Amino acid sequence: MMKPKVIKNEADYQLALSHLETLMDSHSGTPEEEELELFAVLIENYERENFPIGLPDPVEAIKFRMEQQGLTRKDLEPYIGSQSKVSEVLNRKRSLSVAMIRALHKGLEIPAEVLLQTQGRQLEDPKYDYRQYPFGVIYKRGYFKGFNGTLQDAKEYAEELMEKLLAVFQGQTTKKVYCRNSEGQMDEYALEAWQARVLELASEQDVPPYVSGTLNSEIIRDVVKLSNLSEGPLHAQELLQKRGIPLVVLEHLPRTYLDGACFKSPTGRPVIGITLRHDRLDNFWFTLIHELAHAHLHLENSDMAFFDDTETGVPESRDPKEREANDFAANLLISAEVWKQWKKEKGNLINKEDIRDFAYRLGISPSIVAGRLRWETGEYKYYSQFLGHKTVKKIFEANR
Image (tube, rainbow, N blue to C red; front, side):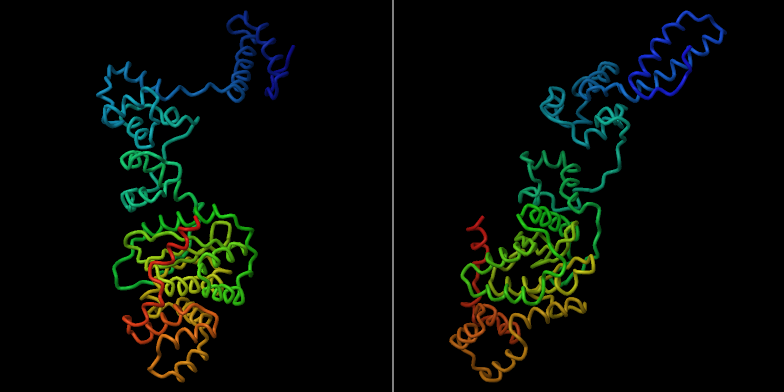
Protein backbone atom coordinates (compact mmCIF):
# COMPACT_ATOMS: atom_id res chain seq x y z
CA MET A 1 0.00 0.00 0.00
CA MET A 2 1.36 3.42 -0.97
CA LYS A 3 1.23 6.17 1.62
CA PRO A 4 -0.08 9.56 0.41
CA LYS A 5 2.60 12.26 0.26
CA VAL A 6 3.46 15.42 -1.68
CA ILE A 7 4.65 14.48 -5.17
CA LYS A 8 8.08 16.05 -5.77
CA ASN A 9 9.43 14.40 -8.90
CA GLU A 10 8.61 12.28 -11.95
CA ALA A 11 9.22 9.00 -10.13
CA ASP A 12 6.77 9.92 -7.36
CA TYR A 13 4.29 11.02 -10.02
CA GLN A 14 4.40 7.70 -11.91
CA LEU A 15 4.00 5.70 -8.68
CA ALA A 16 1.01 7.83 -7.69
CA LEU A 17 -0.61 7.30 -11.11
CA SER A 18 -0.14 3.53 -10.82
CA HIS A 19 -1.59 3.49 -7.35
CA LEU A 20 -4.53 5.65 -8.49
CA GLU A 21 -5.45 3.01 -11.08
CA THR A 22 -5.75 0.37 -8.35
CA LEU A 23 -8.27 2.58 -6.57
CA MET A 24 -10.49 3.36 -9.57
CA ASP A 25 -13.07 0.70 -8.67
CA SER A 26 -13.46 1.84 -5.08
CA HIS A 27 -16.98 1.78 -3.69
CA SER A 28 -18.71 4.87 -2.42
CA GLY A 29 -18.20 5.61 1.26
CA THR A 30 -15.22 3.28 1.70
CA PRO A 31 -11.70 4.26 2.92
CA GLU A 32 -10.43 3.37 -0.55
CA GLU A 33 -12.66 6.11 -2.06
CA GLU A 34 -11.22 8.68 0.34
CA GLU A 35 -7.73 7.56 -0.61
CA LEU A 36 -8.66 7.87 -4.30
CA GLU A 37 -9.78 11.47 -3.81
CA LEU A 38 -6.61 12.32 -1.88
CA PHE A 39 -4.30 10.90 -4.55
CA ALA A 40 -6.29 12.64 -7.26
CA VAL A 41 -5.67 16.00 -5.51
CA LEU A 42 -1.95 15.27 -5.09
CA ILE A 43 -1.61 14.35 -8.76
CA GLU A 44 -3.62 17.37 -9.90
CA ASN A 45 -1.41 19.74 -7.88
CA TYR A 46 1.75 18.24 -9.37
CA GLU A 47 0.36 18.46 -12.91
CA ARG A 48 -0.75 22.06 -12.41
CA GLU A 49 2.78 23.08 -11.40
CA ASN A 50 4.70 21.00 -13.90
CA PHE A 51 2.39 20.71 -16.91
CA PRO A 52 0.57 24.06 -17.08
CA ILE A 53 -2.03 24.41 -19.79
CA GLY A 54 -1.03 27.11 -22.26
CA LEU A 55 -3.08 30.24 -22.62
CA PRO A 56 -5.45 30.48 -25.58
CA ASP A 57 -4.21 32.43 -28.58
CA PRO A 58 -5.40 36.07 -28.26
CA VAL A 59 -6.70 36.27 -31.83
CA GLU A 60 -8.58 33.00 -31.39
CA ALA A 61 -9.97 34.34 -28.11
CA ILE A 62 -11.27 37.42 -29.94
CA LYS A 63 -12.84 35.28 -32.66
CA PHE A 64 -14.41 33.01 -30.05
CA ARG A 65 -15.98 36.01 -28.30
CA MET A 66 -17.24 37.32 -31.67
CA GLU A 67 -18.90 33.99 -32.39
CA GLN A 68 -20.23 33.73 -28.85
CA GLN A 69 -21.83 37.19 -28.95
CA GLY A 70 -22.69 37.28 -32.65
CA LEU A 71 -20.31 40.18 -33.35
CA THR A 72 -19.14 41.34 -36.77
CA ARG A 73 -15.78 42.89 -37.63
CA LYS A 74 -17.44 46.29 -37.60
CA ASP A 75 -18.43 45.68 -33.98
CA LEU A 76 -14.71 45.44 -33.12
CA GLU A 77 -13.86 48.91 -34.43
CA PRO A 78 -14.58 50.69 -31.10
CA TYR A 79 -11.98 48.43 -29.46
CA ILE A 80 -9.32 48.07 -32.18
CA GLY A 81 -9.77 51.04 -34.48
CA SER A 82 -10.50 51.32 -38.18
CA GLN A 83 -11.80 48.51 -40.35
CA SER A 84 -8.33 47.99 -41.79
CA LYS A 85 -6.82 47.65 -38.29
CA VAL A 86 -9.46 45.11 -37.31
CA SER A 87 -8.65 43.12 -40.43
CA GLU A 88 -4.91 43.31 -39.78
CA VAL A 89 -5.30 42.14 -36.19
CA LEU A 90 -7.57 39.21 -37.07
CA ASN A 91 -5.21 38.22 -39.90
CA ARG A 92 -2.21 38.48 -37.55
CA LYS A 93 -0.59 41.29 -39.51
CA ARG A 94 -0.80 43.77 -36.63
CA SER A 95 -0.03 43.06 -33.00
CA LEU A 96 -2.38 44.15 -30.26
CA SER A 97 -1.37 47.40 -28.58
CA VAL A 98 -1.86 47.87 -24.86
CA ALA A 99 -4.60 50.39 -25.69
CA MET A 100 -6.42 47.73 -27.74
CA ILE A 101 -5.95 45.18 -24.98
CA ARG A 102 -7.47 47.52 -22.42
CA ALA A 103 -10.49 48.15 -24.64
CA LEU A 104 -11.03 44.46 -25.47
CA HIS A 105 -10.65 43.44 -21.85
CA LYS A 106 -13.13 46.05 -20.65
CA GLY A 107 -15.59 45.89 -23.55
CA LEU A 108 -15.63 42.17 -24.39
CA GLU A 109 -14.44 40.83 -21.01
CA ILE A 110 -11.65 38.80 -22.57
CA PRO A 111 -9.23 37.87 -19.75
CA ALA A 112 -6.22 40.18 -19.62
CA GLU A 113 -3.79 37.27 -19.20
CA VAL A 114 -5.02 35.80 -22.50
CA LEU A 115 -4.53 39.06 -24.38
CA LEU A 116 -1.18 39.71 -22.65
CA GLN A 117 -0.13 36.08 -23.05
CA THR A 118 1.23 35.87 -19.51
CA GLN A 119 -0.28 33.49 -16.97
CA GLY A 120 -1.88 35.39 -14.09
CA ARG A 121 -0.90 38.83 -15.39
CA GLN A 122 -3.34 41.68 -14.98
CA LEU A 123 -3.51 45.06 -16.68
CA GLU A 124 -1.82 47.87 -14.77
CA ASP A 125 -2.76 51.52 -14.89
CA PRO A 126 -0.88 53.41 -17.63
CA LYS A 127 2.45 54.74 -16.38
CA TYR A 128 2.66 57.60 -18.86
CA ASP A 129 0.24 59.77 -20.80
CA TYR A 130 1.88 60.38 -24.17
CA ARG A 131 -0.22 63.53 -24.64
CA GLN A 132 1.82 65.25 -21.91
CA TYR A 133 4.98 64.86 -23.98
CA PRO A 134 5.95 66.49 -27.32
CA PHE A 135 5.15 63.12 -28.85
CA GLY A 136 5.15 64.15 -32.51
CA VAL A 137 8.57 65.79 -32.19
CA ILE A 138 10.26 62.91 -30.39
CA TYR A 139 8.74 60.49 -32.92
CA LYS A 140 10.15 62.48 -35.86
CA ARG A 141 13.56 62.70 -34.22
CA GLY A 142 13.87 58.94 -33.85
CA TYR A 143 13.53 58.63 -30.07
CA PHE A 144 11.63 55.35 -30.49
CA LYS A 145 14.46 53.06 -31.45
CA GLY A 146 13.47 50.22 -33.77
CA PHE A 147 9.97 51.58 -34.46
CA ASN A 148 9.32 52.12 -38.17
CA GLY A 149 5.60 52.89 -38.31
CA THR A 150 3.83 56.16 -39.04
CA LEU A 151 3.06 58.81 -36.43
CA GLN A 152 -0.50 57.47 -36.25
CA ASP A 153 0.89 53.99 -35.64
CA ALA A 154 3.15 55.40 -32.94
CA LYS A 155 0.18 56.95 -31.18
CA GLU A 156 -1.56 53.57 -31.29
CA TYR A 157 1.41 52.02 -29.48
CA ALA A 158 2.26 55.14 -27.49
CA GLU A 159 1.96 53.49 -24.10
CA GLU A 160 4.52 50.83 -24.99
CA LEU A 161 6.83 53.27 -26.76
CA MET A 162 6.91 55.77 -23.90
CA GLU A 163 7.44 53.03 -21.34
CA LYS A 164 10.36 51.65 -23.36
CA LEU A 165 11.91 55.11 -23.79
CA LEU A 166 11.66 56.01 -20.11
CA ALA A 167 12.70 52.55 -18.87
CA VAL A 168 16.29 53.79 -19.15
CA PHE A 169 15.83 55.52 -15.77
CA GLN A 170 15.36 52.06 -14.18
CA GLY A 171 12.90 53.53 -11.69
CA GLN A 172 15.49 55.91 -10.23
CA THR A 173 14.63 59.52 -9.51
CA THR A 174 16.93 62.51 -9.17
CA LYS A 175 16.64 65.98 -7.73
CA LYS A 176 16.55 68.23 -10.78
CA VAL A 177 18.26 71.60 -10.60
CA TYR A 178 17.11 74.05 -13.27
CA CYS A 179 18.97 77.13 -14.35
CA ARG A 180 15.89 78.99 -15.59
CA ASN A 181 15.61 82.07 -17.74
CA SER A 182 12.95 84.51 -18.89
CA GLU A 183 12.06 82.75 -22.15
CA GLY A 184 9.17 80.80 -20.66
CA GLN A 185 8.11 77.99 -18.35
CA MET A 186 10.18 74.87 -18.83
CA ASP A 187 8.27 71.80 -20.05
CA GLU A 188 9.41 69.15 -17.60
CA TYR A 189 7.86 66.31 -19.62
CA ALA A 190 9.86 67.35 -22.67
CA LEU A 191 12.96 67.57 -20.52
CA GLU A 192 12.34 64.07 -19.15
CA ALA A 193 12.09 62.65 -22.68
CA TRP A 194 15.27 64.49 -23.74
CA GLN A 195 17.17 63.18 -20.72
CA ALA A 196 15.98 59.63 -21.40
CA ARG A 197 17.21 59.81 -24.99
CA VAL A 198 20.58 61.20 -23.83
CA LEU A 199 20.95 58.29 -21.41
CA GLU A 200 20.07 55.84 -24.18
CA LEU A 201 22.63 57.36 -26.56
CA ALA A 202 25.22 57.46 -23.77
CA SER A 203 24.73 53.72 -23.17
CA GLU A 204 25.53 53.08 -26.84
CA GLN A 205 28.93 54.77 -26.62
CA ASP A 206 31.94 52.51 -26.23
CA VAL A 207 33.34 53.80 -22.95
CA PRO A 208 35.30 52.06 -20.16
CA PRO A 209 33.92 51.89 -16.62
CA TYR A 210 34.01 55.22 -14.81
CA VAL A 211 36.24 55.32 -11.73
CA SER A 212 35.00 57.67 -9.04
CA GLY A 213 37.25 60.71 -8.72
CA THR A 214 38.63 60.44 -12.25
CA LEU A 215 37.24 63.81 -13.26
CA ASN A 216 39.35 66.57 -11.71
CA SER A 217 40.60 70.06 -12.51
CA GLU A 218 43.54 68.77 -14.53
CA ILE A 219 41.34 66.69 -16.81
CA ILE A 220 39.02 69.65 -17.37
CA ARG A 221 42.02 71.86 -18.17
CA ASP A 222 43.07 69.29 -20.77
CA VAL A 223 39.62 69.65 -22.30
CA VAL A 224 39.99 73.44 -22.40
CA LYS A 225 43.30 73.14 -24.27
CA LEU A 226 41.52 71.21 -27.03
CA SER A 227 39.46 74.31 -27.82
CA ASN A 228 42.33 75.64 -29.96
CA LEU A 229 42.03 72.73 -32.43
CA SER A 230 39.85 72.94 -35.53
CA GLU A 231 37.96 69.80 -34.42
CA GLY A 232 38.33 70.55 -30.73
CA PRO A 233 34.72 69.64 -29.78
CA LEU A 234 35.15 66.18 -31.26
CA HIS A 235 38.52 65.68 -29.53
CA ALA A 236 36.92 66.75 -26.26
CA GLN A 237 34.25 64.09 -26.68
CA GLU A 238 36.92 61.46 -27.36
CA LEU A 239 39.03 62.50 -24.35
CA LEU A 240 36.03 62.27 -22.01
CA GLN A 241 34.96 58.92 -23.46
CA LYS A 242 38.39 57.47 -22.68
CA ARG A 243 37.81 58.42 -19.06
CA GLY A 244 34.38 56.81 -18.93
CA ILE A 245 32.30 59.98 -19.38
CA PRO A 246 29.89 60.01 -22.34
CA LEU A 247 29.35 63.36 -24.04
CA VAL A 248 26.08 63.29 -25.99
CA VAL A 249 25.08 65.96 -28.48
CA LEU A 250 21.29 66.02 -28.84
CA GLU A 251 19.06 68.82 -30.07
CA HIS A 252 16.86 70.41 -27.41
CA LEU A 253 13.12 69.79 -27.40
CA PRO A 254 10.55 72.61 -27.60
CA ARG A 255 10.08 74.63 -24.41
CA THR A 256 13.17 73.27 -22.66
CA TYR A 257 15.40 76.34 -23.22
CA LEU A 258 18.37 74.07 -22.68
CA ASP A 259 22.05 74.41 -23.59
CA GLY A 260 23.56 71.63 -21.51
CA ALA A 261 22.99 69.17 -18.71
CA CYS A 262 24.90 66.94 -16.34
CA PHE A 263 23.56 63.91 -14.45
CA LYS A 264 24.41 60.34 -13.53
CA SER A 265 23.37 57.25 -15.42
CA PRO A 266 21.64 54.49 -13.41
CA THR A 267 25.07 52.83 -13.10
CA GLY A 268 26.54 55.95 -11.48
CA ARG A 269 28.55 57.24 -14.43
CA PRO A 270 28.46 61.01 -15.11
CA VAL A 271 26.83 61.90 -18.43
CA ILE A 272 27.12 65.25 -20.20
CA GLY A 273 24.43 66.40 -22.64
CA ILE A 274 24.90 69.34 -25.02
CA THR A 275 22.11 70.67 -27.27
CA LEU A 276 24.02 73.13 -29.51
CA ARG A 277 20.93 75.32 -29.29
CA HIS A 278 23.01 78.33 -30.33
CA ASP A 279 25.64 76.40 -32.33
CA ARG A 280 28.56 78.68 -31.54
CA LEU A 281 32.02 77.75 -30.36
CA ASP A 282 31.99 80.15 -27.41
CA ASN A 283 28.67 78.76 -26.16
CA PHE A 284 29.82 75.16 -26.68
CA TRP A 285 33.03 75.55 -24.70
CA PHE A 286 31.50 77.46 -21.83
CA THR A 287 28.55 75.04 -21.61
CA LEU A 288 30.79 71.97 -21.71
CA ILE A 289 33.15 73.26 -19.02
CA HIS A 290 30.19 74.41 -16.92
CA GLU A 291 28.67 70.91 -17.01
CA LEU A 292 32.04 69.30 -16.27
CA ALA A 293 32.29 71.64 -13.30
CA HIS A 294 28.98 70.27 -12.02
CA ALA A 295 30.22 66.71 -12.51
CA HIS A 296 33.45 67.48 -10.64
CA LEU A 297 31.99 69.61 -7.84
CA HIS A 298 28.49 68.27 -7.27
CA LEU A 299 27.88 64.79 -8.69
CA GLU A 300 30.38 62.57 -6.89
CA ASN A 301 28.30 62.21 -3.72
CA SER A 302 24.82 63.17 -4.90
CA ASP A 303 22.09 62.16 -7.32
CA MET A 304 21.32 65.64 -8.60
CA ALA A 305 20.67 66.41 -12.24
CA PHE A 306 21.59 69.84 -13.60
CA PHE A 307 19.85 71.43 -16.59
CA ASP A 308 21.29 74.73 -17.75
CA ASP A 309 20.60 77.68 -19.97
CA THR A 310 24.18 78.94 -20.05
CA GLU A 311 23.43 81.64 -22.61
CA THR A 312 21.43 83.89 -20.31
CA GLY A 313 20.52 82.10 -17.13
CA VAL A 314 23.67 81.03 -15.26
CA PRO A 315 25.09 84.38 -14.12
CA GLU A 316 21.67 85.39 -12.78
CA SER A 317 21.10 82.13 -10.91
CA ARG A 318 20.49 82.26 -7.19
CA ASP A 319 21.38 78.62 -6.77
CA PRO A 320 24.79 78.38 -5.06
CA LYS A 321 25.74 75.27 -7.02
CA GLU A 322 25.09 77.07 -10.30
CA ARG A 323 27.24 79.99 -9.18
CA GLU A 324 29.99 77.59 -8.13
CA ALA A 325 29.93 75.85 -11.50
CA ASN A 326 29.83 79.19 -13.31
CA ASP A 327 32.83 80.59 -11.42
CA PHE A 328 34.77 77.33 -11.72
CA ALA A 329 34.21 77.19 -15.48
CA ALA A 330 35.06 80.84 -16.05
CA ASN A 331 38.27 80.52 -14.05
CA LEU A 332 39.38 77.33 -15.83
CA LEU A 333 38.76 78.84 -19.24
CA ILE A 334 40.67 82.00 -18.33
CA SER A 335 41.88 82.53 -14.77
CA ALA A 336 40.42 85.56 -13.05
CA GLU A 337 43.85 87.00 -12.31
CA VAL A 338 45.10 86.66 -15.90
CA TRP A 339 41.85 88.10 -17.27
CA LYS A 340 41.93 91.07 -14.92
CA GLN A 341 45.55 91.86 -15.78
CA TRP A 342 44.94 91.65 -19.53
CA LYS A 343 41.87 93.87 -19.33
CA LYS A 344 43.86 96.38 -17.29
CA GLU A 345 46.61 96.44 -19.92
CA LYS A 346 44.25 96.83 -22.88
CA GLY A 347 41.64 99.09 -21.33
CA ASN A 348 38.57 99.64 -23.49
CA LEU A 349 40.43 99.52 -26.81
CA ILE A 350 40.59 95.78 -27.49
CA ASN A 351 40.90 94.92 -31.16
CA LYS A 352 40.86 91.69 -33.17
CA GLU A 353 44.62 91.21 -32.99
CA ASP A 354 44.56 91.63 -29.22
CA ILE A 355 42.03 88.80 -28.97
CA ARG A 356 44.04 86.53 -31.26
CA ASP A 357 47.32 87.19 -29.42
CA PHE A 358 45.78 86.68 -25.99
CA ALA A 359 44.07 83.44 -27.01
CA TYR A 360 47.30 82.19 -28.63
CA ARG A 361 49.27 82.97 -25.46
CA LEU A 362 46.78 81.01 -23.35
CA GLY A 363 46.48 78.18 -25.89
CA ILE A 364 42.69 78.44 -26.15
CA SER A 365 40.16 79.26 -28.85
CA PRO A 366 39.70 83.01 -29.59
CA SER A 367 35.96 82.33 -29.35
CA ILE A 368 36.33 81.92 -25.57
CA VAL A 369 37.97 85.34 -25.25
CA ALA A 370 35.48 87.03 -27.57
CA GLY A 371 32.50 85.42 -25.89
CA ARG A 372 33.62 86.57 -22.47
CA LEU A 373 34.18 90.13 -23.68
CA ARG A 374 30.71 90.23 -25.25
CA TRP A 375 29.12 88.92 -22.07
CA GLU A 376 30.88 91.30 -19.71
CA THR A 377 30.29 94.41 -21.84
CA GLY A 378 26.84 93.48 -23.09
CA GLU A 379 27.99 94.52 -26.56
CA TYR A 380 26.89 91.54 -28.64
CA LYS A 381 27.47 93.18 -32.01
CA TYR A 382 31.26 93.01 -31.63
CA TYR A 383 33.74 90.18 -32.33
CA SER A 384 31.17 87.96 -34.08
CA GLN A 385 33.82 86.68 -36.49
CA PHE A 386 35.50 84.77 -33.64
CA LEU A 387 32.44 82.93 -32.37
CA GLY A 388 32.25 80.13 -34.93
CA HIS A 389 28.58 80.50 -35.83
CA LYS A 390 27.02 77.28 -37.16
CA THR A 391 30.27 75.32 -36.99
CA VAL A 392 29.94 72.92 -34.05
CA LYS A 393 27.08 70.85 -35.44
CA LYS A 394 29.02 70.38 -38.67
CA ILE A 395 32.01 69.04 -36.75
CA PHE A 396 29.92 66.33 -35.05
CA GLU A 397 27.79 65.57 -38.12
CA ALA A 398 30.90 65.06 -40.28
CA ASN A 399 32.12 62.35 -37.93
CA ARG A 400 28.97 60.32 -37.41
